[in-house]
Structures are given as C-alpha cells and as structure tokens.
Image 1 (cartoon, rainbow, N blue to C red):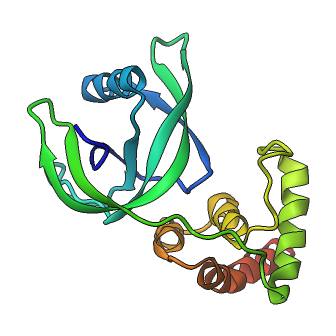
Image 2 (image 1 turned 135 degrees about the horizontal axis):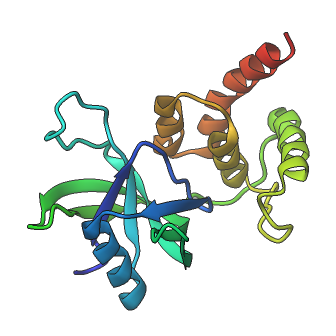
Image 3 (image 1 turned 45 degrees about the vertical axis):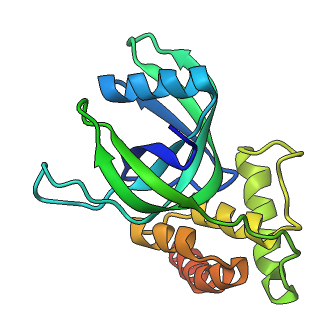
Length: 196
C-alpha cells in the first residue's frame, strides 16, 4: 500500500496538523491497522464521519488529516491506547472496503500551509491563545509557535468548544487568515457568553 492509499479511521472528532489526539482502540480491524502502521512506520487517515441514521451507511467528509502514531500503551482494561500527531491534510478521492471492514482511501495530500506571522488585526487572538496555553499546559515550550498564523488558527479550532461542523470547516479552509477571520466572531461570542 503506497502512502497515497491509506487506511481510514472515521471518528466524530477532528485532528488538525500539529495536534495530538489520544485514541483507545478495541475493534479488531483497527487493532490490525494500528499494528501494521507501527510495524511499517506508516500513517493512517483520521476523517470526520457524517452522522447517519442508517448504521450500514458509511459517509465521511472529504478532507481529513494524516495521523502518525507517536506513543502507545496497553490499558488496564486491555484496550490499546495510542497517541497520534496530525501531520498533513488530505482529500479523499475514492474509498474501498476490505473484507475485515477497514476502509482504504485513495487520497491526494494537500500542501502544507506556509508559516507566517498573524497580521496585526489578530494580535488580540495571539495574546488570548498564549494566556490559554499558559493555563492549560498541553504544548511544550518548543512546540508553541505563536509566530505562525497557521499554528495559531489550528490551535483555536482545536481547543474552542465549537460545533463539530465549525471545526471541520476550520480544517477545510486552506488559508490561515481566512480561518482566523472565520474564528474571530466565534471566539467573541464564546467569550461574551462565558462572561454572562
């Protein structure tokens, strides 16, 4: 399987580039997928599954993120726990299902966003994100990149209590300035609601 043919892990959550996502794996098809990815040092795709009334229907959004396994542990409950790191966005071209039910996607990798400073009008958002990250301590000092509009916009999309469709929209936007513009009124609304 070339890296442009990847196993898919559909979830009702979103992984962004440079985000970490802990997962608990228990289904046999995904246990096999994870052991293969670890053995061959390949990535799998995390993609948002669409809600469906019909359990036999498999439908996802087109844009997802490649996930690299960076840590794993066996839980006391026997479940496999892994930590993934988002590396690069991709677009699904086609999906086929293996006999074991694992979905394999032919994908097109999307270009990584360039890193440039957030424009001056977003300075208040950069200050807010720094305060939040100082508070929650989820990124080490060498991971924090407040000089990157891309990094800043993805971190807000990741940590804000947004509707899942808004989070997906943030993933699909290909320009960090558009993403910051999209997030700014949502951040303002969240802050106003929390002060009431």
